[in-house]
Image (cartoon, helix red, strand yellow):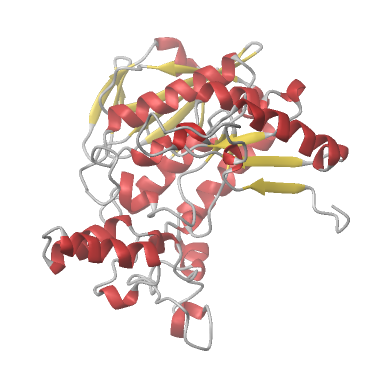
Length: 361
């Protein structure tokens, strides 16, 4: 604070309170003994009162295995605990029975329901989400929830739309604004993450072939989000004149900052989303309500503020789908879309692969 820092991120801050009397864990792994204990709220209030709460600060708490009910309490302004919270439930929708080191296609309905539940409950109770798809512990979302080859640009812009027009504070992790994908390393020796190396050995012990184990590491390794930022198509992607600690991804010659700034559609799209949030109060302040909550392919929501309404539509599939919406939405303004046009007939939108569009009335 003395150096002028006004923003603070607290790692797994909801684990700082333990039970006074230690007993056998009733969940088999012990998380119930040290997660979201009531005393955490007391500690956060004290921390705020004695440090960051004395200045006009922004705080974000990383929450492990948390609940929406606790995150409401952590972030309600009049409680003076935190500004916002990260949670990770939406990044476990491709785990198999809670096991990270198995793989199946992500469960869209679970992802949709999580976003709707957290969006609606935080909105109704004046809590505040920190919204993100990528970080240093996760595979690239574009490779995980989109199609990073045939529809890379559309996948990237859809993922951006889904959180930047949402209620909460969106975070941009290095590289997502240029559409970086997983590196798809070919050998275990290219990985540095100890968790990934240990997991590979564990998978071999479980009877996986070396290729099966490597395929899982490719999909799930934390190193997917840790490779050097590709700046241009020179040696080592312009990141260093030496040897980087971890290799560059395979597609650095085409997916790099220089190429995106000169020829890309993803970075300008991010700029427009950020500009919209700064200029439209409905994005930064409006409430959140689910739209078409039972759809098997559409993640959609409305934002409402005073006499304004916004409808945000996101087709999370590689296939086209037809959506019928109320006629009055077509009387409004399209504030952003990731295709150059809109395919409409009789109040029905033919939504193309990974298409996003937002209406304002």
